[in-house]
Length: 155
Image 1 (cartoon, one colour):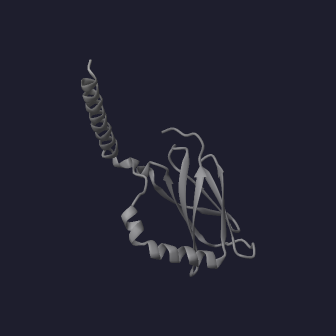
Image 2 (cartoon, rainbow, N blue to C red):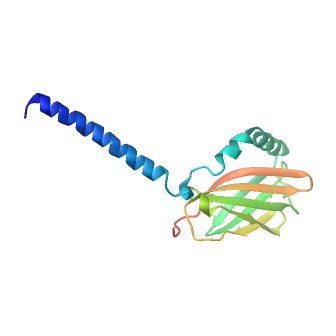
């Protein structure tokens, strides 16, 4: 094989390899929409200013929410700036498994003590979940995002 033929083969091989790589990437990205990384990304971008104002208002309020995970049960402890429990609040959370937007679910937590709330997550998906917490007491509203690990689960 001459040098000319070898170089032509190399160039053709690179072009074909590139075309195959592009075809594979297009096929993988245009399939099932359940594997989207960011749900409602356009709506999130459109509401960015309002989201940042809400986060700042929550920071100014001074509340803190700690999340303890036991299996699929979450225990949320909510305290104010001085460490006193935030009792008689309505607590909701939205759980989004990483990489599986189709399994997003919203839950209402039940008060089990002053400033302590519990919720059992349905389903059997383990792994990392992004949690959006909302705590409302009267006209006070606190929001926070957490990342939790539900351990090994069945997919």
